[in-house]
Image (cartoon, rainbow, N blue to C red; front, side):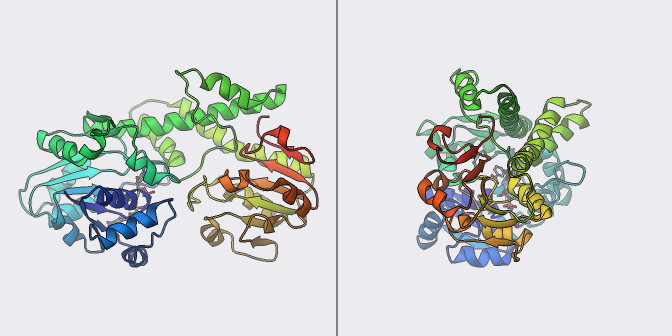
Amino acid sequence: MKITVVGAGYVGLVTATCFAELGNHVLCVEKIESHLNKLKKGIPHIYEPGLEEMLKKNLEEGRIKFSTDIKEAINFSEVIFICVGTPQSDSGKADLSQVEAVSRQIAEFMDGYKLVIEKSTVPVNTHQWVKKTISRYAASDLDFDVASNPEFLREGSAVFDFMNPDRIVAGVESDRARQIFEELYEPFTKKGHPLLMTSPAAAELIKHSANSFLAMKISYINMIAQLCEKVGVDVNMIAQGIGLDERVGAKFLNAGIGYGGSCFPKDVKAFIKIAEDHGLEFGLLRETEKINANMRRVFLDKVEEILWINKDKHIAVWGLAFKPGTDDIREAPAIDIVGELVKNGANLRLYDPEAAANFKQLFPENENLQYVNDKYSALENADALLIITEWDEFQEADLDRVKKLMKLPIIIDGRNIFPPEKMQGFEYYSMGR
Ligand SMILES: NC(=O)c1ccc[n+]([C@@H]2O[C@H](COP(=O)([O-])OP(=O)(O)OC[C@H]3O[C@@H](n4cnc5c(N)ncnc54)[C@H](O)[C@@H]3O)[C@@H](O)[C@H]2O)c1
């Protein structure tokens, strides 16, 4: 099939590359020229495991192309995925101006039937606005459908997730749209991945409900973690004990410093606003947010309790990305934690395998804040090591070497990456254990 993808960010670029890998011909349009110039050479402007190889292969084999020309992209195919950003606005609502702009561009340039697919995360009934906008601005009376096909990939394993979905949700209103989805996703349904057909409104609502539920699960275990610390119980035992119950499930029960990223914080906020717009108070999600925000404070209080005074202490920080496997630092806990330590006058050495360049834009290097290229260099002469992101390479660290390099063997682990019993010789602190 021929496919157009608008927006080459985490979702758009992965969607475009994976559909090309499945044998489709994809034209991906992106408005940021510097990203585009890299993409045309097969270099993703984001880090995702496996993406670069797949992109290069499909460029070489001629199945994926990049452009800034939206007219060319709209004329290229009848299937158009909208993958633009839906960031948080000042009120907490999703800012849909990018979706609206693309809808107007589609209206202006459409030259035949189009299936316009929202892949961006949008509030319920946004499809009605997309439909209305295309009808209002359309130059001629051409037929089109609007569908919702929310994306559930996780940054850090986006390519794998796209290729191995637990389910595909397609919110459609016409048989024509339904048939296109069946054809588009046949490589997945053939392998047994379920394709759930719903109404567009239900599909939009599924995405917000899913993300909010997962965020709630994280905050739930983080609240239990705080209780565990007070009563002397290891939260991992609780996570195991409840996670083995199939009704609960073991995933998303890792206690730590809470969630960040470009999705959970903004989607939870947007969902609270959606409920509010319909006269409902989503207190459950307000509490989810509150617990999550507080975990950063809990961690910082722990640091202060352990180090007493942060000023002039040499502190090594492992992990800046909001989660492992990505260079994304949007809403990352590291921003608040490093920010507070800088304010306290600590000397920091920061290391992250992928996210340092992005972090540097928020926290430029100076004599009290340095970025290093490997995890061990961060530790030289350190009074303490803080672990903020659970990259695999931290779990595999040579602990004897860690101890030798540090001035004091103090580790404050915000992600519970080490079993406490392995930590003899360290003053080792973690979350809820
Ligand atoms: N990042 C994730 O893990 C994830 C997962 C599932 C869903 N989502 C949702 O998918 C959407 C996109 O998220 P993202 O993380 O990929 O965002 P992003 O900011 O990384 O990418 C969006 C891209 O769209 C481009 N763009 C915007 N308007 C354009 C236009 N008119 N023409 C061409 N390009 C345009 C931007 O320049 C940007 O590169 C959001 O709604 C998000 O909530 C994200």
